[in-house]
Image 1 (cartoon, rainbow, N blue to C red):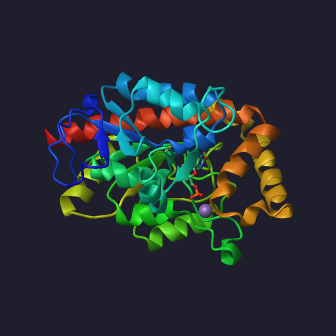
Image 2: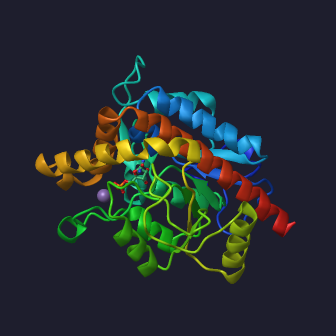
Length: 323
Ligand code: PSU
Ligand code: MN
């Protein structure tokens, strides 16, 4: 029933397309693809995507990068497909420039109906497809959130409502300070989404910095995270859980300089009207921050790979609990 548009890579060990109740045998970690198509520049996007998959394999789990290609929702990609994603758009240097769309939940059907268009799936889009494939754990860099000024623009990422309605847990370094962190946490509470931080203090991370000044319950190990997920699934909760994983401490010193770049980017986006242009806001801000502060790219890459590792460790622990 779900298989027509779903193409699951054999490495996942799922013999057929599944939804709820799938007999999943390997610890699986979903990875998104908007970060490849819109979030990071070439070739850092390809290097990061490969390194995330490697970090997942290193701890004994199986990575499943998810993207829309050739009219299918692909769950788990071949190396050539990762390269296509990294090179599409403008700057990849590929001979054939392929059309690419940033695909959240609302965009999935329209992109699948056009096999010539590539979809880089956001956190919301990836969560939908991971769930259809029976994958419970998902790693990324930062999720979308409540934008600053959302009281006027109503720009609240569909990532937050997805977390409220789909039982996939997301490991990220929180939300970038291009967003309103306090209101993002409030909105997650409204959606009934459990939030935990791998900071011992419980401070929710703020992407380039481990600290945001906002506190949630702390979780001290992948084992503890897995216990939360086990309880949530056993209870039958239909919502997701958000785990905040702080950036590794050796990358934190540059956080201050990057924060200044973030502030400037947000100011510019307001001045030139970008802040009102829907789905383009986040990619524009991400690009501008990297232009203003090139160090941001290295730190972004480092935290994404670390999040993939912690998510994979949790997937392995969850499987041990169930064994
Ligand atoms: N934040 C980042 N890097 C990203 C994104 C967010 O630091 O690449 C991407 C993710 O795919 C996320 C999406 O799901 O942007 C959110 O976009 P929007 O704000 O339009 O919902
Ligand atoms: Mn938005």
